[in-house]
Image 1 (tube, rainbow, N blue to C red):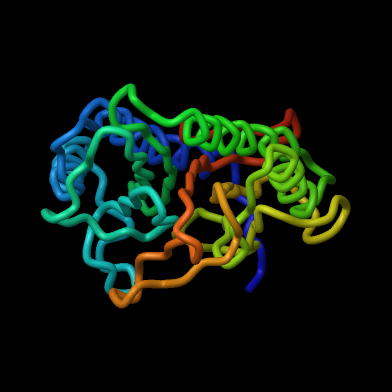
Image 2 (spheres, helix red, strand yellow):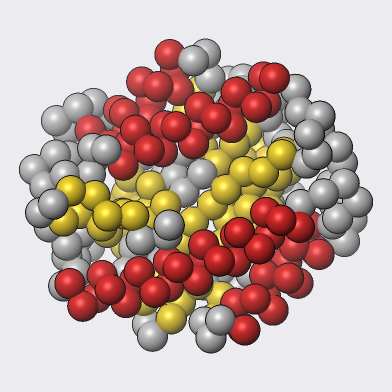
Length: 250
């Protein structure tokens, strides 16, 4: 599949969908507290997306059942919201949300601590994961490569003693949720597809506090760390412009 470059008008439309994703995530961040279930977050997200005039991108995508992915503690991505998953003090929860508005997609993720009583190692895991996202975004320049983006994540993560998930990667995004190219969170500088003006990348570091290996649970969706260590996930959609990176999900 070819990589599609977007016009300025298309990027403006993607900024609108990105803005809605950010409003939803900000709303959910404020809700995260002990005793809240991941299904409470799901219902709130569904209502907010509708209120903002968009539709959810994930629900029904390859038969995925929900609007959000809510991944708790050792869950990396694609955790399915449930009445049975109740947030507890000291947990961390990754919330991934996508919407489509006027045919253009937005996709972003945050990891949120539950309560103030978070272990220092988990706070560091979240901080390093988010910092690695911004380090990657700095590489989103015309003429750089996808390898430059992935290497930026990997270098920072591994320097801090954490590991990068390899089985799940970022992606191009536009009129489809997943477009070319794949954007791994590891790689070699100067390798991979060259970045061109108008490309839009969903960059999403998934970082484990232990080893990088993963497994998928019996629900065929929820990916967890193989060693039971904790995982964090942050994501932005970023446009490649002649003036440098533009974050569409701010």
